Image (cartoon, rainbow, N blue to C red; front, side):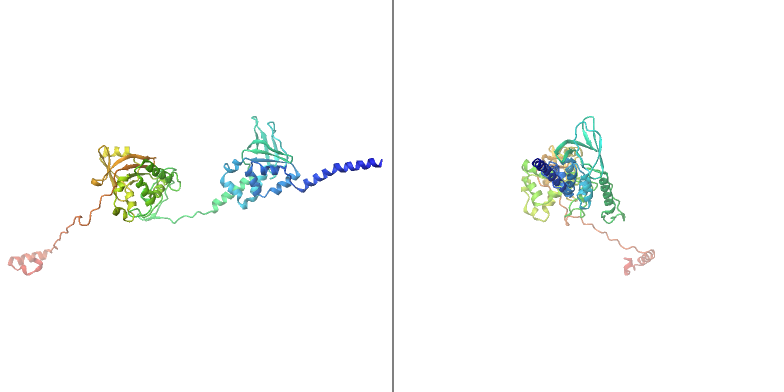
Length: 444
């Protein structure tokens, strides 16, 4: 009988040894490669895995897995990348809000295994954040956890837990309250810098702030106030009300019309002046971005070749020439022709203050300028996009020369003899009667 009992003892020892070893591994908190946590870090829920690492929750989750099976409701990556409010995401990633981030992530983990199917009953579960979530199924077969739909039930199934994919992030009420409190605190504590009040020099009163402009509305100020300061321009630039909103991409529109000039052919010199010789392309793009419109009278290459060195050598001469070809209105060939047909002569403002360009009908077209310095509308509507209109002309326009000092009319000032008093007048008459008035200078 002794050998038999010895055999039973050895057999029981062999059966108990793996159990003891397995229990030791579980209580030691070590995670094997088949754990649900390893599956989470290696799954396509990468955004959630990164947040778990940033929240320093790996050790907490390892302890939870060592004690219980867990269920993770993992939001899809799009819910954390594009659908999440950027301000709320910034709030979660701030170092001072680590506790809120941890609470948010633990709210997605239930310390029990939950297998989902279309017949799942409505139940409530406690999460690792010490909050309750409701799990329910609808008649259509969809399963919801709180307000988020489960889109990938049982996506990952491991011996120590399961992962279900959900369409959106679950936000506990405490985290939402912390975010609202922090946002309200910032709004009342941050004092925005404001400039000193401006005084209107005409009335010596404080200027009233302009009413808010609707998106896309034209600027309230004239275009000259938005231009860069320069010779014969408004000295104080002020952006229009549409500037900060950037409803128009002026730089892209200017780039498009310059490329159109190059592709159209015959306007390479005009494009070269706008881009290389001056910074007018940048200024035009800024004006269009602020809501202004422009009509460009573009001289062709033959006209630009006639410019002399003296006309281009003076400082700022290229800019002044181009400014005279920019009309702060949106005009097409049809609108200008109809105007000159109806009114005979039409004066258009230019960006070269205070000069204007005169248009009139000639030979069934539109002629700009006077006499020998006139130019005809040669290539109509080269570029029209609703903000910028480009009209090709066959000559370079110059404003009429101002009269020189010698040509100005001289004004003669009439000299008036001083008037004499009544008593002196009578005395002079009496002396004149006797022929003695010539002896007194006052009587002459």
